[in-house]
View 1 (cartoon, rainbow, N blue to C red):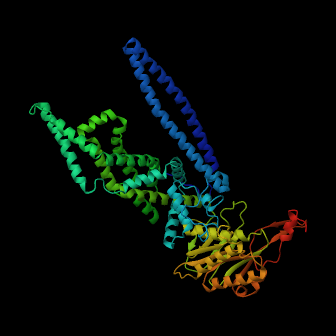
View 2 (cartoon, one colour):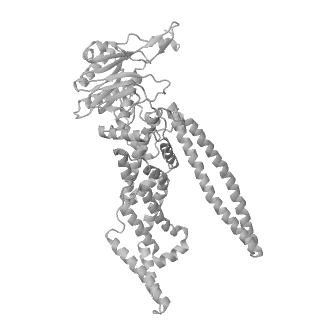
View 3 (cartoon, rainbow, N blue to C red):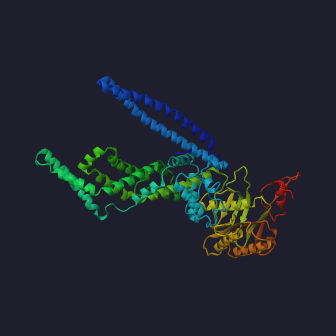
Length: 611
């Protein structure tokens, strides 16, 4: 079913993209040739028919026209299949282009990942500070998922930390899916082909599938009436046809059926339209559902996905095929209107199709949403599996009971491998904080975001950008990117205070099993140094007393000399390196102790501002 990649060997996405582009181009050239052959068979066939209508039919020209039309029909079928292969290889090419772009962090080649419409970014404790959504964000790098539902699930996992058991189950599922390069490639390609499926049509279909029973308590009576009228038509017609009855009483039964049809036409037509329009949209998901059913089932999470995809006693693709057959009978109304009237008048055709549709809805309808939720979860797991496969040096985090975070070679996941500088980081236990000092541009903010992003990935069930990483279940709070607000009348300082108040309130909120982790980057810059120092120390005191753990960065070296930081802070710093010619560079290496240098004036001189 899938290839087994060599552990640690990266997937050659760029090469695979070129291979699929080449196959797409070959199929596209074949498609052009077939279209010419179609024209070359249809025009002579049409000309022969016209010529025979004018001159009279002859056996040989008629046989030639028939053969040409048969050839034309075969070419139409062949052409459709070739065009499907063109689209398929182009989808596979796009999947590999995006995977290559993720590895290189080429943001322009990755689709944007907008925040969920339900997200209040200003109220969320870390979404904006950690760049979870938008341009060059964590979600853009992870995605896109194969389905809109998968993207929503992935966003929810990033925004809301999972409990330990769910994290472990996701990790097991990710580990099972990570080696299946071909399966994931085809799964995401199916998603590309289904990307134009409208959510509005899906919601309409779900509204029908989960809706109330048609005709309510009168349904048995309607069904009995339909069966009696249908039986009466054919019994009376047979009696009239073979002689025992000389009058055409069967026409009265036909009239009764027509009256019943007009009286109950609206719910039947509405059901046909809602089921058909939604099913045509869902038809684009057929390959995705079939591919999902073929996924491995080892582990609790994947077994749950497979069980939900088989809810109702039949797997989702088989159930959808049954619905297709029923709706194919319903298409008689549109496809052959004249014949439909006659057939319906004699058999009450639409009623029988409608009752078959209702039987399908009553058996499978309530499971459709479950199918799509299971598909969305598998989709999100496949995204995280790609992260694990493409980053063999990253580790699976351990969720432990200790109230501290320990990481070896921790890096920022959104920085390319060629530029990322990892550092060992330890945060906690309660009663302590990690105080990071250093000059401008040395890497303090990057370190804080690296801690936060890896914590988010860990609690989503993903691997993390570190050689080893252990953490408890945490509630994350940050104060990194603070903005003023003209609309709310908030200055920068007041906006920062409001955000810090949220962090402190969250820390003091009683919780059972989770540890609050705070990320504070250069807080309260909008006031003088004396008041800022007093305010920062007050905030830190509240956080320490509440048992929270976290990281704080600052340029104010004097903060480390006074309580509570003088006893609680573990000091680390970044620094710059000045060469013999006065040039300055950064190695982004974390060192123990307090920073000993400043570089603001030197940076001003480097950009041409004379002092």
